[in-house]
Length: 300
Length: 272
Image 1 (cartoon, each protein chain N blue to C red):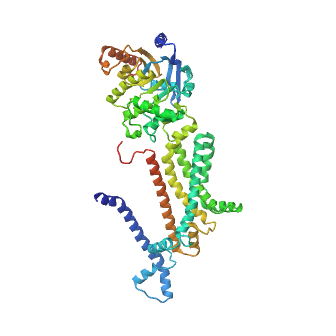
Image 2 (cartoon, chains in turn yellow, purple):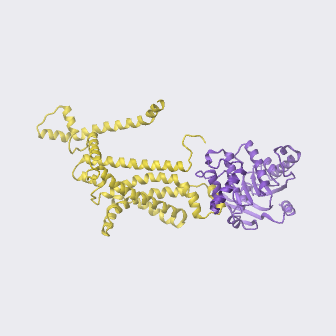
Image 3 (cartoon, rainbow over the protein chains, first blue to last red):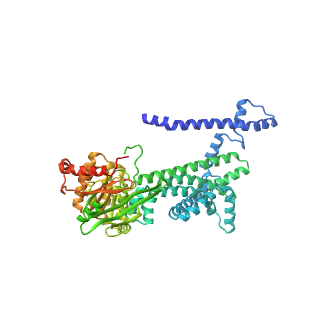
């Protein structure tokens, strides 16, 4: 019992405080931003309302400038739990569409990132020639690349999941490459000397020393990469006028000024991101455990 | 120099495991060249237990690394088992024990010992048999499934010795393997190492800072001095092969220790 209240004080309480502060600021913002439109509305309809009624009305507009948290929560709840998952209005359906291209793009990006890193670590020419291009590739805004990729691939009849996943790949291979180059070079001199005394080849050194040593670096960069993959998938849904996905939901919301829908989709997107990053974190912990890492907080 | 040469040739058995002539190694650094080794002549016979002793910077570790083909000499010649160091390394002629245990943290103790065996393509059953044998040899039976962090420093270093013994190299190179351990653990491991040496008949090259350790363990003590790193004396131990720890209190032992100390002093090792 003591431990539980400690846990509450140290972990839950700070988070809860911030959440309450954000919600309060959000409500104030919703009132301030929606008040002038509501005042216009009241004037035109010749309605007089008490301050309390007025306040309630600023929080109940169908297309507010800033929807109140409870409006977003209600929309989120209805579109997540009260719709059939196959329905075009279900957020779960849209999240699933985005998730599938995120996952494919992330898998391809991670594989590509590892492959490039292995090449860079083993071939001096690649180290010198490839790295500047890889860094340059990330300075081009993804918003400029995404439509081109989709259009070009569309012209050669590649549509659907793959073009979207490629945008995710484009964003996610970079952190993996950088992290893995560092990870593959992380073994201590003494560990490298040791395997050299056994006359191990480059492949054996890679498999038995460099790769295992790089695992912590891999998971750290995969956490960044999976969040980037999600951003890539959402951005890729914008120029296609995709029929489904969180990106298309955002776009449709913007077309029809469905601000509540936009916010609900935004939140769905961030929940998805949090879930994915947590998932990678759990996988990291599991692999760590399997590789015999010392449990935290235990003395040697 | 002349003297060491004479002594080594006089006692050299027909087959020398390590033979260096006029060996030199110069590192180019930003502060100019550093002569890590200069004009080193040395013969190590099969079955010898040779200690290298000297202050920091005398090149004793560098010499061991040259034998192991981890450093390249810049002058002179050296042969290991009658081959160049590179050929000897590729023939897996030696086991190397580093200053730190250098166990791979993601492998259990037995998997760490299996590492050279995996690389050298030993069969699974052969691996298991050898792991069990060397774990027993260093008194670590029952710890095979532990991870390195679960073992004390002394046990980790014993595991790293077991790893060097797991494959068939008859030369063991040890670079201050007990340097980081406390006196009591060190005594114990020294005793075990002598026992191991007499049972396995290996040739051992052992780098150390400690005079008692060198005298207690060795059949031959190579005293080195720094700047440039060179051999100043080679002392053949007159101690018997059977050496209980108490031998360190005998006049014979103290006499050899005295000669080592004199050699170190003559090498101007303590001037700076």
